[in-house]
Image 1 (cartoon, rainbow, N blue to C red):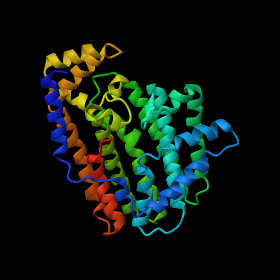
Image 2: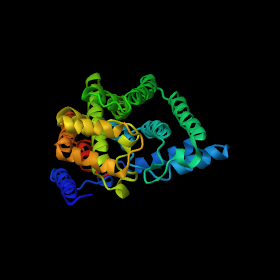
Image 3: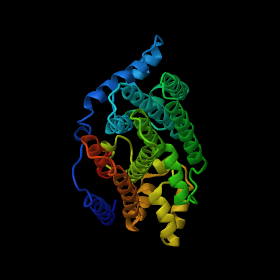
Image 4: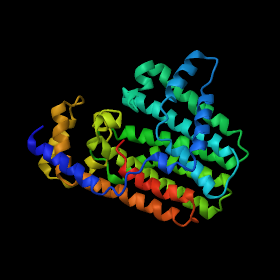
Length: 347
C-alpha cells in the first residue's frame, strides 16, 4: 500500500472514530439481565443435546462462543420494560438465538466462508452436507419448540420471520455481483435478512409483556431501525476493521459477491473512470490483494464511508427516539444505549 493510500485509510478511520461518544461494552449494557442471559445459554445447550453424537458435538462447538447475543437481550429487555416477570422470555430468547445461528450456518454455506467469530465455520470444519442439515435441524427444532407457547401470536412471529429471512437471503443471492443494485433494494435485503429478526425479538418481548397494539408497533419499529443500523455498520466494518478484531477477513462481502452501501454509493456518485475501473475489476471472480486495495482506496477517497456511517446514524437515532417514549427504567436505558453501541463497535 502506498504512503498516500495508507494516509487516506487512517484519515477515514479517524473520521469515523471522531463520532464515537463513549466506549460502550455489552456487559455494561446487559447488567440488568446478565443472570437471565446465563439461563439463555443453558437453554441453548439443551437444544442441541441429542443421542446423535454428531449433533451434540457440533452443538457444543456452536455455543462455546456466545457472541453478542443482541437478539436475546432485546427480547429480555423489551419484556422487562413492560414489567414481565415470568420465565417464558428465557425460552423464547433461546429460540430467537437458535434461528439466528441457523441462518448464519446457511449463510456460511452459500458464501463458502471459512471463518465465523474468529473460528472455523461449521461449513469449513464439517463440510457442506452436514452443515446444511444441521442448519435445517436448528430451524425446525426452534419452530417446533415455539408450539409450546400459549401465545399463538408468537408462533406466527417466529414462522413469519424465518420465511422473511430466507426471502432476504434469496434476494441477496439474485443480486450477487450486480453493480446496478440500488440503495432501496439493498435496504430491503438487510431489512429482511437482519433487521426482521431484531424486530421479531422486540415484538415477542412485547407480547409476553402484554403490550398494547401501539406499544407492539413501537417495538417493531425500534427493532427494525436498530437492525438496519447494525447491519450497515457491519458492512462498513468490512472495509475499515482490523481483521484480528473482526474475527474474519475484511473485504469478504465483496469477495463473496455481496454489494453493500459503500460500493453502491461509489457507483452512483464517483466519476465514470472509477466506476468503469471497479466494474472491470469485479469481472474477475478471484480478486487479488492489489485489486482489493485499489477498490478500498477508491471507496475511501469519495465520501462513501462517511455517507454509510451517517445512514447508520439515521436509523440509530430513529430507534432511540422510539424507545424514549416508554417510561424511564434501567431496561429503557439499556435499549437506549444499544443503538449507540451499534455505531461504536469494532466487530
